[in-house]
Amino acid sequence: MAERQTGLRRYELSDGQWERIADLMPCSGPRGGDLWRDHRQMVNGLMWKLNTGARWHDIPERYGRRQTVYDRFVRWRRDELFDRVRLQLDEEVRINAELWCIDGTNIRARRSAGGGKKGAEEPDDHALGRSHGGFGTKVHLVTDANGLPLAAVLSAGQRQELPFAIATLEAVRLPSRRGRPRTRPRRLAGDRGYSANWFRQHLRGRGIQPVIAMRDDKRRRKRPGRPPHFDREAYRRRNAVERGIGWLKGCRSVATRHHKLAVDYMAMLKLAMIQHCLRCSRLSDRT
View (cartoon, rainbow, N blue to C red):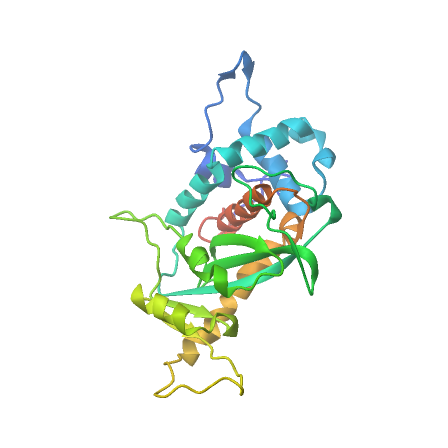
């Protein structure tokens, strides 16, 4: 087992983890006569915010000015830096292309998440709504068979999973060393919430075998012919998406939404995906 680095605080990136993303960071040259704050210091401050769920004003001074950390977060979100980092890490991780899993989970929103301003890149409802679980956001997530998050889509808390299934699946774009990015698995597993004939037909039209449980509704009108094929062995592996949701909710800024803007919360969710990729056994400094 590798030795633990001295002076490394909790949630901060190790030297090995930083080296994997350092090349994607913007140049640290002069900016309007000033110098950029150290990118690694800013990333460690964002990791602290991600895992603790504290307010921006509570970020420790060792990570620089709180406003500087927040401004860097917004700039990187607008420059799509988090997407580029995730694509590079996805290329290094062995992603299971045989079976992907899809599901949705509700995220409770605090009172501070309300009152956001509209913007060109922001949905009108800010992906906020009131469901039986309270006021919050729903995260629609796709993972591989090992629980590694591949893509996510946000909606209001009261929305169902099925209407966002296609958009969630199309959000996956895995880099490939040869040819176009991979956008589809061989099989897709989902619970009864995704049981719809039109969705099964859409998957088969794209060459994807659906592994979706049938709804147990006695009032449902029985259709003539044989029922669709259902692979029970593959369906038992659907709990991978539950593990992926659990890992992401281990970050308190993901488990509870404090951000007014949906784009800011999505950026924090992508940052959690990056952290999870860096902590995978194949990418970790520990052996």
